[in-house]
Length: 492
Ligand code: GLN
Figure 1 (cartoon, rainbow, N blue to C red):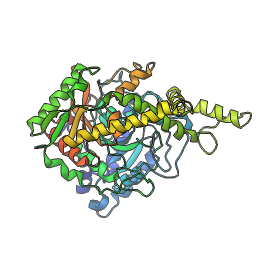
Figure 2: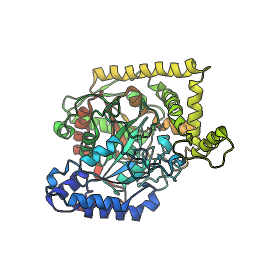
Figure 3: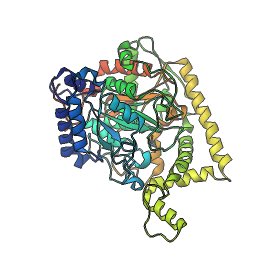
Figure 4: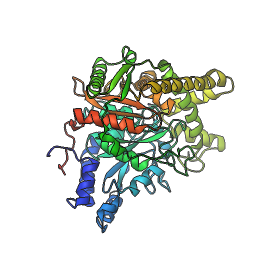
């Protein structure tokens, strides 16, 4: 159908059937990046000749059916995931010229599944932010409205998918960085269960929270992408041994009998009325499809933002200690002695938000405040997690908005870190609890901006998330509504 965007599934099918070539797919992607990225700022490094070499290799295969579930699918990768031979900056001056000697496990697995890594996507520095404005390489713009942010920190990945530069992308989600930009850009974004996807080769922000996840147009593409990257990895001891189900097969299951908890009390304050309306309407649609919707209370939900910003900054301050200018990363030239070299290298390398987080994290871990802040935050984290798990003992899924508002204007929250942090009020809870969550489009505001519905599931039960999301998508088809100017596909 003309005007239907080319999903990863459609591109793979066209490639396997011989209706197109990987080279043609990649040439079109590269042309779109050239034409649109100057305005969007979504992509950083793109190695055109490497992309075309990889495409030619796929085209040369004797049997295309053996090329994998993502055969010839172009993928953009958040720039905090290592890509062998391709600059990986994490949005920071600290790593402006860092070329990793290896690829992240998630990236390697995508390639093994037949995907083509077309380039790296812009993001908040080290994943710290909710607007993709905290990048050393300039802000990302929202394809729906170039005066607004795409959300963050995986804003480049979300914008690249929303604008149709690529059908799918990888992001990372520590406290919402896949889900929130997915919501603000009208994409599907999945944060898997903690331990589902290897963090090997992901530039560490907060190791007890970081997860890699897909950003796509459709729920099916998200299921296939997650299926390709999930599973145990000897290089990340926190990956779980849990078997990886066939999530694509789960999609058709429907929501009949699925118990969905809706904590409507959380939507009463601080949530944009149109967002609350769209999410409430989405829950009604799921009910009309046979889900059993009930009101629930989520214990300690009000603590999630402050607790997250203590735990995440504490871990960040420790993880970022490695950027000392000694082995790799930015080094100040001509310092007078080691101490000055450290000080100058780090001051020059980090932007204001990262510096703020290092200071906050160092403070909550410091001898005099450790018990009052860090230990207390860990205790509160355990209670928040228990609140989610006890709710999820009564229901199969929890429905919430992904973000309390649609895309906000560039610059609006830059001078107000607390306002920026409150963008994460609905996403940090699932992160702290380690449970999987998915965001998907559930309509537009009167101003024409996408709204995200978040579904949260039990640990390692992504299948139920995909089942409900698949049913809702079939009913509503919101994914077909694209920003004006977005590539709408060949109908392949
Ligand atoms: N916005 C949150 C933060 O700034 C989450 C970021 C993320 O998930 N990487 O920490």
